[in-house]
Length: 216
Image (tube, rainbow, N blue to C red; front, side, top):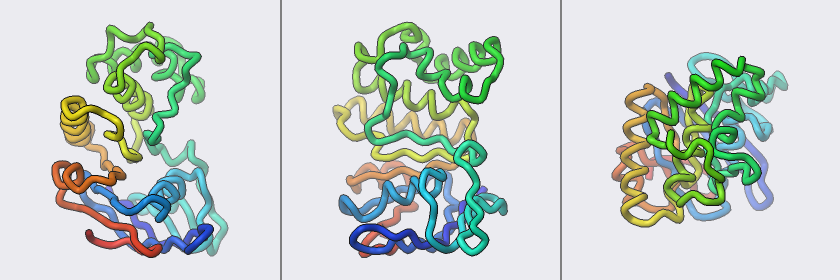
């Protein structure tokens, strides 16, 4: 599976110009704050429209600026783990994980089956009826990952997924992402500020600088 990006997105202080084809199982993206890393993810996921150019995934066009084609986020099947995790504090773990399937109006029995399958895989079954507010940082990370993966996405975007974790938990979560990419055969693109994280996860490391993206 390949993600081909060739687009421009206007930003407050510069334009983000991306011309790159993602083919690696795991790709890391680095860059200073404000250079457009999150904007890149939002364009790929469909949360933001590109201003010109094209976004394609395995020969299916998601965006085409010249034709004003903008495939909705729901049709792209992109798993997105936000930097702040964006878990719903008023829902327990089970309902956080199930949220994407409930939006799709999947049958309750199938939702339950899928929630239990992914929670078993991520070793959080014992937390299903726990409050989000009572979880540790590593547990919240796994819940967010489960919510991103339960819809069986074509692509997984992780925005600083290891930020704020202690050293031991970070190591566990980094190994988990690598294992998931292999087990589910899903391409992963993740943002990090730390070179050692990027080098541990992949040899394909990109840098965004001055609105351009290229090999770090």
